[in-house]
Image (cartoon, rainbow, N blue to C red; front, side):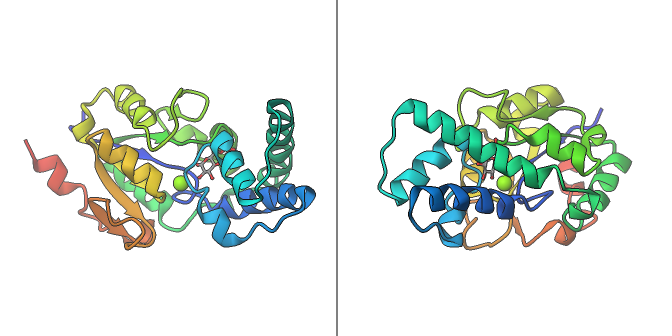
Length: 219
Ligand code: BG6
Ligand code: MG
């Protein structure tokens, strides 16, 4: 068995679903009568669905009963799923499959570590579900990122110590979660935004072929 393993975030690393979250949250904001911009949407990256609604309601300065919140969470997700159900393999972000091939050839196992409760469906839509050893998603955790729980469960699935796990993440909350878990954090996206990551790349096409060698050769 390999001495290291990889944990992938999903949204923003493997697929760009932020645009669909944006459309669904914007519909809700329209219904509630306030403006929700793409800049606002940035605040929701890596954040759980429930917490995202809290942030959205704060933006609109709206307070709602728990019942209403539950109804809006359900309708937002139904709306979001209309977009997800139309997704296909063409939406896999560049570099993903080549990176998975590299990991397969090095015998390095990988699991998913996502905040999304829709993660298995999204992977299925893009034909990647079968490639992952295991899935840790929003249904498996009690505490959302930046809490390290999702990645710590991932390291157990990989049967590896946290310090032997490499996490690919596009969100500040996710990089913080990986760092708190004592894992190797790789920020995918803007280097200034993700400056707390141990390594930074703009996207998965930039990961060098030999990226994993230094970790494999370490004691
Ligand atoms: C994360 C996304 O991966 O999943 C967040 O970056 C999203 O924007 C969160 O809110 C929860 O997703 P879902 O699919 O359970 O609503
Ligand atoms: Mg993400």
